[in-house]
Image 1 (cartoon, one colour):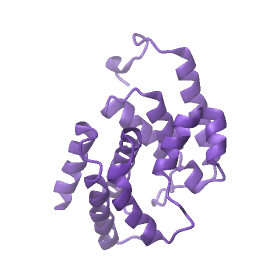
Image 2 (cartoon, rainbow, N blue to C red):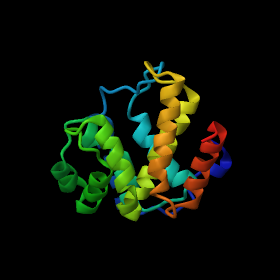
Image 3 (tube, helix red, strand yellow):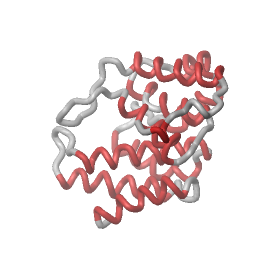
Image 4 (cartoon, rainbow, N blue to C red):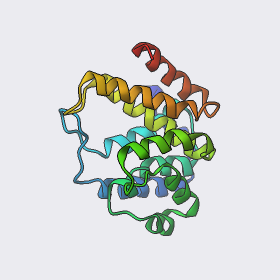
Length: 189
């Protein structure tokens, strides 16, 4: 980190900071055994932390509800976490945003993907921010490395589907939308 990255001049509300650190720890414990599907099998927790980092440091989002929802966005979908647990520990507002960005895993994959496209315009502004950062992280990761078991056609299909989801999120955050558009232009999508 450079001299410009120092945070000691930024006043932080200690209660909010403690809660965000607690949230990060909660997500890390929940995702502790999971790995990304990349050739390096990177720890899964890198993803939700990366999504929160995009929001905080690229999009300048300082809303703790959004940042905590970003950290928790895959916990219900991919671990034994319940919405009730998130509500009890982090509050109803955080839980509601997580609920908005969580796929129903009882549905077939194609239906879940279809619903993401159909429902993206109706999400709350906070959920839209998490969704944009999530897609940005995933698309950057796909540009970096192809997941195990994927070919270039599947990567292209993911980019095309993601663009459909993101079209429903337009008008949420110009910074994130511009970064996503640059990725689509690079891919010719």
